Image (cartoon, rainbow, N blue to C red):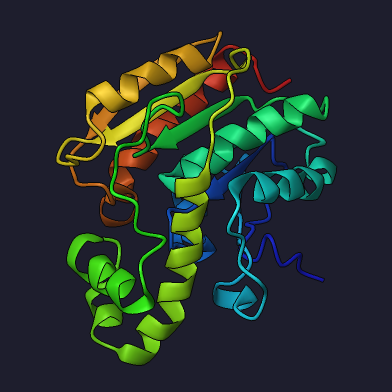
Length: 254
């Protein structure tokens, strides 16, 4: 029976690494369906499906990030019987980072690598306008006008927007109510990736991630705006493939 948290996991014959992937706010696990075709055969891509979207549409949405992370720690713990890594984009980067810290609290193995994209370092003050408190109409209008993550075909269809807006609202609540707590740096390599044309996540927002790891830190940029993970995934996957090779080179999967 398929675990609802992992609807698209790509089975591998002899996997050496599980790569758990977390989408941006409003996104879903289907974002990563093609990734197994573009990563080595020894990597098992496990796209994580949060409740309230796609195959889990009828389930309650999370509105508190740490509640989600606490539950994910319990969900993932039985899966961590071999080396693993996290990839997260925007909200997914926040989830990945806090999940790594939660696994450390649970005294479970740490990721072999963290790939985090399009999200400011968590210790930085988020000065973005707060919108979760807006009325449904005002929130929807703001999303249509300012949020590039809404596909045009969704924005044109009121029925699809009625499905999308509650998901987006819950995810924005997770972002806006998140409170960073100072803890020791993680003991795993960390790569942070930003879009060159993303005005919301500049190098000044991304480079302070360096403080969050005691291991190797890489800061990379790719052409594209905030949603390069969706619009230009090959450039992102090229970086991940390069660093997967480093894992094997330094025998970090044993």
